[in-house]
Length: 436
Ligand SMILES: CC(C)(COP(=O)(O)OP(=O)(O)OC[C@H]1O[C@@H](n2cnc3c(N)ncnc32)[C@H](O)[C@@H]1OP(=O)(O)O)[C@@H](O)C(=O)NCCC(=O)NCCS
Image 1 (cartoon, rainbow, N blue to C red):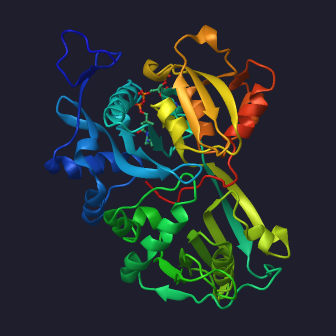
Image 2 (tube, protein in one colour):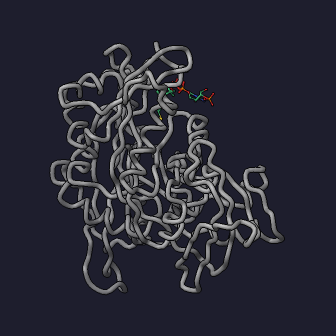
Image 3 (cartoon, rainbow, N blue to C red):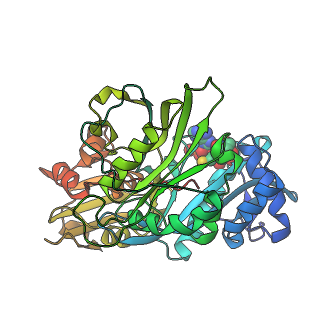
């Protein structure tokens, strides 16, 4: 929003005469920031939770809005590196903590914050911002597109039988939470390297993951089971692998034998280890139902069992929304499954800087060159889409054909939608275990 001449820098004039100051917070404003943010989500954070949040918060990436000196809105961004299709990583701004006080809602404060925040992300040279949304309809207007999804399951442990033997030579250990921080990062990083949408975790972030914050666990204490990595060649039983872990909690409020085990994460780069962890989770005594809160769309559990119906999908949720800022840089950072050429016309109603035509040329090895087309007349446009839809395609988990069928992508040359579908596809579903 361009400031009017009478405005001071950092002030934004809302439509109805309200003027708010937008700026990063200072250290001493942190407690208030956490309370304003928490209130937006119906929570009042405890001093312990505020301390955990402080350990990962980058103060210069916070933005708070002040009405006459009173804090009325918050947001922040975490700096992560995100894995993209092909195993490369890009720096991203993980937008979080977006809240506007109910007293000040629908007066344009979020819009001003989004504007300022994307300027900051661009200034830092990060090619994209990501977020997960409390309500999926909010962020499309700001150029964010839903790019990764997860599914929730219930599994009836009394009917779940494994079709093939699971490798029992893969030893498991239940690790106390205080030790988990030493073993999980290596396993996580091996998994992260191949999974589009996975994010780097700093040491402080790991402490946060394992701090078992009330808001993240919803009751019960976390258990961590680990299959330690085995160096050496892959091959015979238990042979070389990068390890795996599962984090879960147990709801033991029902009668014993009818408890529920709630799986938070199953992380393993190797499918044998994934199967071993799932068998463990389905065999914990006194549990009759296992609930997975967030499994990747391509998790193989259903196919590991004799009865595919033992795994019931109870929900499919959007998770990562991607907002491209440097279109050419982002498109060059990922790999593509086939060679090909596509001229893409990108509309960006919220931020005009990135709008334009881009020529994507993918070589036989899946690497790409992308350049902005200066003279659009010279290269006929193959597909037209909004930057939000390009964000949806980016991680390889959303089909261009599906978006075209919904009228969100327009094919302009024969076969262009099919080509876009094949180019942007990726065999591993994007998935992010990071709650941010
Ligand atoms: C969602 C929230 C941040 C919106 O803030 P706000 O200041 O009222 O939003 P704005 O007035 O700037 O609205 C900007 C645009 O978004 C739209 N919008 C805002 N909230 C929306 C919602 N929940 N669903 C759909 N659209 C929404 C507005 O209609 C407006 O659209 P337009 O400019 O195209 O006409 C605020 O309601 C809130 O804090 N909610 C509770 C916490 C939460 O859900 N935060 C988001 C976490 S991801």
